Amino acid sequence: MEIYQFINSFYKLIEINLNLKLDFSGVAVFLLTIVFFSSKDAINNSQKMDNENKYVGMWVTKDGYIRHELLPNNRYDEARGNRKSAYQGDYKITVDHIDYKDDTGFVADGDFKNDILYHAGMILYREKVQ
Image (cartoon, rainbow, N blue to C red; front, top):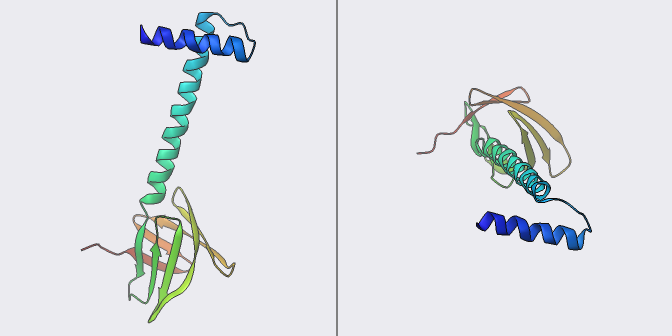
């Protein structure tokens, strides 16, 4: 009975505010369409966030000289040797591709494959959390 009351209230709202004449089934279809597309967007956004978040963390070259820390706020901090924060900037991940733009405007990119980051001729491995 609650859904019927909700649809009926929504029907009256549409009729009064939008001056549309829809029958009861038209309102129901309209509401279901809104719910469908809203949930579809929520799922897509959730998948996008999951994809971006799966790469957050520290990525290092085999010798440990270069370290990229991908932060959850789409910022990165790159250390080189003893120079902590040698470069900082923004990153954007699309599927398994990463685009970097440091704070000076320099851009670079890379690709993740099998939990390895290939970036600018370098190979970086995910640092294991202990």
